Amino acid sequence: MSTAIDSLGLYNNNPYGLYNPYSTGAVNDDFMAQQMFQNYSQNSGAQTSFQGLQQPQADTFEKSGSGLSTGLKLGAVAGVGTGAGMYFFGTNPVQDGKFNDDILKAVDIDVEKVSKQKAEQLFANKKAEIFQKAGVTLPEGINSENIKAYAETGKAPAELKAAMTQEQAKAIHKELTEIDLKEIGKKAYNETIEQTFQGRKDKLANLQSQRTKLEALADDADLEKFFKENPKTFGIEGDEKAIEAEAKKLAAKYKNKAEAVADYTTQISNQEALVKSTRETLNSKVSAYYDDATKSLKASAPENIQKAFKNFKWKSAGKWAAIAAGAGLVLGWMFGGNNK
Image (cartoon, rainbow, N blue to C red; front, top):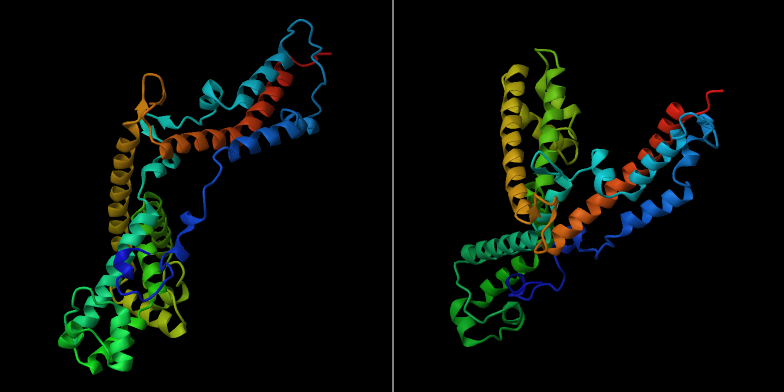
């Protein structure tokens, strides 16, 4: 835990670590490659995937002499998973000067770092509220153990006794120990995720889904009832009473369906602009490490960007190689197969 959060020594656990999926350890960036080669080998170049088509086992079209051979070559190119084979099948990480979204994530917000910063600030705000409400200023060098000892035994450094009474120390100590660090961590993490590129894209998708449901309503629909019956769609959580209250609050914002649809249309437009600007910003960061002339990363590219390109390459190869290989075999069979 950072010094800021631990300055009062209240807890030893990380309040945000429980909500951070990125802190589970490093991932082998060769995993996709290993899976690709393993699957490709097991399928003998994807031939077994097309056995049901009963293609000939050998090329017997003497005049052409290139049917199945061509198919195998196409399959082999795709099986390599790099260079022209990869790009030909639509897996180029750069198209029209724009990098694939999976690549852009490598230079997006550092979720763990930003979550920690947000958690620290939220915790600091909670502490400030407690001391402000008590009307006292915490002396420099005083920690939670000092306050606890003062509250329980009356023993404390002179500067602490000068800053507050024992009764104030008891009240402050009680409130400090009641701060919900798990809730702070969850709030910090969720706020951070909402600021990420993927989070902004997800929000856009949610808004579009919400508008679609609203558009399907009758013009005179009961909006409060509608929101109450569709809590998950509109991000309403809690028990029945809480859902009912939130549904009522949301419905009160609109006079009718048309007004609700218009509002969501505005929200979607704003979110689309935010996603676009975020994509452009991230694209600029990645492009600084990409040599457009050689279509490759510069040697100065940081490790996270190198891994992003490598993972994208193998992910794409794993998805397309078998398809390409199989397609190549079928093309060879169709255009160069037995004509007898």
